[in-house]
Length: 100
Image (cartoon, rainbow, N blue to C red; front, side, top):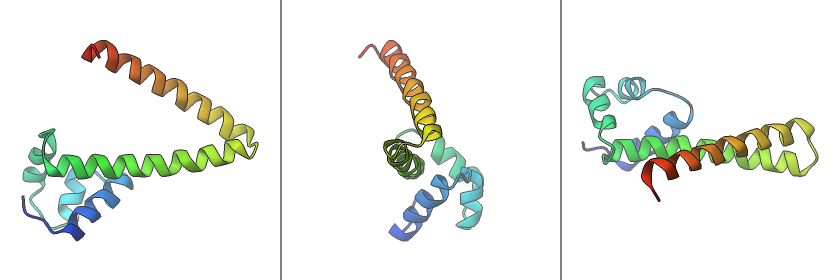
């Protein structure tokens, strides 16, 4: 798949905004079926940029959530505690599945 850097950046931004692989393909005027097949390959550049976009968006939200919690926001503290518990569970599952 040949895309320029601006298109890879758009994929990251759109993925981080919650758009599906197929909708991103339509936005970039690409074949949605081909895009979906590329995404399903865990080693593809599309998968890397899509996942990076989602991660960057989540990280930005969580950083802001940490700031709010540090400022004393009770609701931010509660949300952050719940997210941390979920992450611990995810790490435990990964540890069990991967044996690492």
